[in-house]
Amino acid sequence: MRRLSAPRDARWTRFAAQNRGKAMRIEKVLNNNVVVALDENGAETVLMGRGLGFGRRAGDEAPAAQVEKRFTLHSDQLSDRFQQLITSIPLPHFLMSERIINHAKIALGKELSDSIYVTLPDHISAAIHRYKEGIRLPNPLLWDIRQFYKDEYQVGSKANEIVREETGVEFTEDEAGFIAMHFVNAQVGGEIRDVYDMTYLMQEVFRIVRSAYGFEPDCDSIDYYRFVTHLKFFARRIVSGQQYGDEDADLLGVVRYKYPRAFACAQKVCAYVKREKGFASGQNELLYLTIHIARVMDKNAG
Image (cartoon, rainbow, N blue to C red; front, side):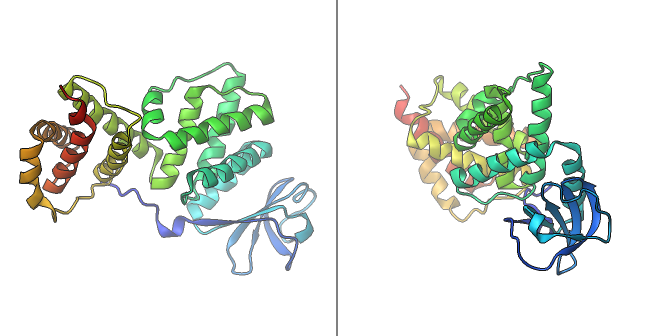
C-alpha cells in the first residue's frame, strides 16, 4: 500500500516579501503579475507582484522592489502544478487562499504540507465559480467531518467567512467540510482520496460500535475525543499499510477479561478491516481498540 508521508523533495518554501538583495533574472513570464526566475542557488522561484511581468521577457531582471511574494519550489512536479495553477485562476483567489492557510497554521498549530498552496487555491477558485453558477455540492461526510475533525472544520468555517468577506459568495456548511478535508490532508500528507478513505473507515468503525452497544456515544466527552484521535492514527496505518508492534500484547488477556463486551466489539472492527482492506490488525491494535471502546461505551452501557 502507498505510504501517506510526503516525500522530502516535495517541499517548497514561501518567503515574505523582501525588497532587498540582487535582482533575479527572469526565466519565464507567466502573466502580468507573476514570473519564474532562478534564485542564487539555481532553483526555480516564482515571484509575484503587481505588474511584475508586464512588458518583460525571459532574460530581463525582475526588480526586487516590485516583488511582493516569493515561492521557491524544490519539486519539479509541484513547480509545474503551481505554475499552471497561478496562470489559470484569478490572483485574488490565490491571495485569499493564502490568507486562509495562514489562519489555519495558527488555529491548528501544526505543520502543513506545502502542497496546500496548490490544492486549496485550486479548490477555492473552482468552488467560487460553481457557486456563481448556482451549483452547490452536498457533502456526504459533513457529519463525520464535524465529529472527527472539529478543529479543521472550524478552519473551514473561517474560510467561508473570508470568502464571503472578499467575494460576496456565500459558501455552505458542506463547503466548509470540503475545505476542512484539505487541511486534514495537509497534515497527514498523501492524496486527498486517502483522507476520504480514512474518514469512511472511521465512519464504519463507529457504525460497528453503535450497532454492538445499541446507543450513541457521548460525543462531548474527553474519552470520545481520545477515541477519535486513536482512530485517526488507526485509519492512517490501515491506508498506509503500517503495522503496529505487539510489545504490549501480554496485557490483552487482562483487558479481554475486564472488558468482554468491548473486546468482542473490537474484534468485529478488526474483522471488518481485514475483510474490506486486507489489513491484519495485531494484538496491540486489538488491545488499544478494546480500551478505548470500553472507556467510551461501557460506562454508559446498561
